[in-house]
Amino acid sequence: ELQGAHEQEKLLLTESHHRSEAALQEKIQALNSQLKSFQERMKRVEESLLRTDYKKHIQEHGSPSPFWEQELESLHFVIEMKNEHIHGLDKKLLHLETVEERNLLLEEKMKTLQQENEDLQVRIQNHLVMARQLSEELQAARGALEKEAQLLDQARREKEELLYRVLSAGDDTPFPVAAGEVPLIAT
Image 1 (cartoon, rainbow, N blue to C red):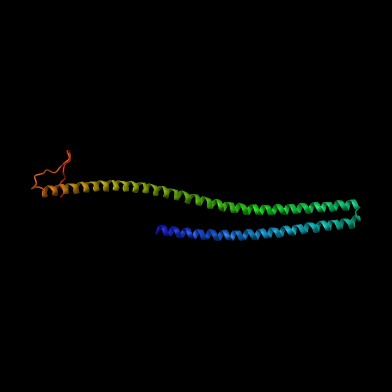
Image 2 (image 1 turned 90 degrees about the vertical axis):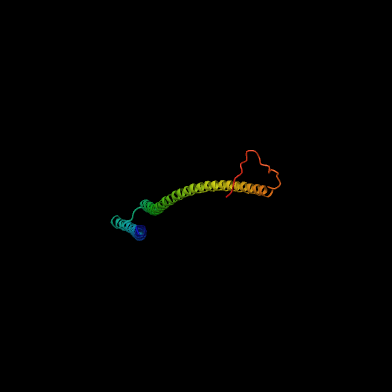
């Protein structure tokens, strides 16, 4: 019952984690889109302010000389390049954040798989020990079976010897018995 309750609680926590993770991903995406739109607005505002300041300056001081017009154009070009560079860095930052999140998830999976691997190695070791014990028991059983077969053969020979003695009891010819061999009486 405790294991069942633990498993159910584990499933509920996993589902809750997945829901929370999905909600956070949605919030992150919404915030990223808001950030992007805000940055685009900022760029438009900056460009608008520069144009407004430039037009105001022309109205107040008259048309600038060609040299200053070229300088202003080059400054606008540099500002646009810097803005593009900043936007590129923002994209790289967002990409690195997603890669970091993915790496964290992969690390968690790797830890889980390492734990499962360790558990499997322990089980393999236990199975090897059990297999060795069974092999030893099998060898012992084979040895005992061989001894039983030898004893059975010996008993069969002795039975034949006794039968021969009984049948040839009237012949008065002794049955050759090897020295040191003690006959067994099978019951």
